[in-house]
Amino acid sequence: MQIAIDGPAGAGKSSVAKEVARRLGLKCLDTGAMYRALTFKALNEGLDLSDNFLLGELTRHCQLEIKFDKNMNTLILLDGEDITEKIRSPEVNKHVSLIARSPDLRKELVYLQRKIAEKSNGIVMEGRDIGTNVLINADHKFFLDAGLEERTHRRWLEMQEKGLEVDPDSLLKEITARDRIDSERKEAPLKIAPEARVIDTTCYNLEEVVEKVIGFIKHTESRG
Ligand code: CDP
Image (cartoon, rainbow, N blue to C red; front, side):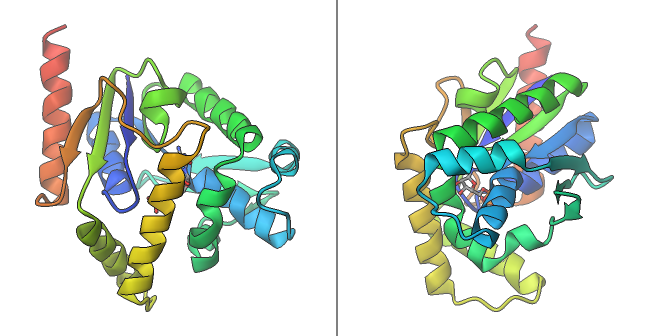
């Protein structure tokens, strides 16, 4: 079974995807972590972030390893180093959407994502273009959304829990900018797949959204 979950930053995709995967006994892949890993590398190497060719070359020549822990987290190893924590830095947050515009870089990452899906015995994959591009034939497609203020608040809480102090206004600006770049890019932009079920999670907690997603899946499966 393949389940695609897309949506903007802070809509709850990662937490929902992990819990749905856990309950259904499937693997879970956070594709955003892969774009973040390449952003980390491009920033370290001081690359021009608008150079599609160089970003493609960088992706082809690095060693990106994806692993999964027992809590359904996606672990990222780049050239042998575990950079799972490092890819959540403010620097990476700020630049990741710029890099994710590169068609050559996306082509390489989408190839890896499809290979992971093929090798797994069922997967929940979350990102921006899963239902519209990566797993176009997914059995179930969801688009999670929430109001901008709510998404900013959730991200702020997450950062607080990690001990990171951020100004809510700058966070709101960053999320707005990222949403705009992700939706306006030419290559596989963030948009709702025609067959996707849209869930506005603004007024629901994690458990409620997970229940809805699993409910839709069971209902569809029972109809054959
Ligand atoms: O967790 P959050 O929503 O902040 O972002 P993420 O899922 O880690 O994704 C980070 C960025 O990677 C997004 O803002 C997109 O620019 C890019 N991305 C993408 O272009 N396509 C995907 N399938 C996943 C992420």
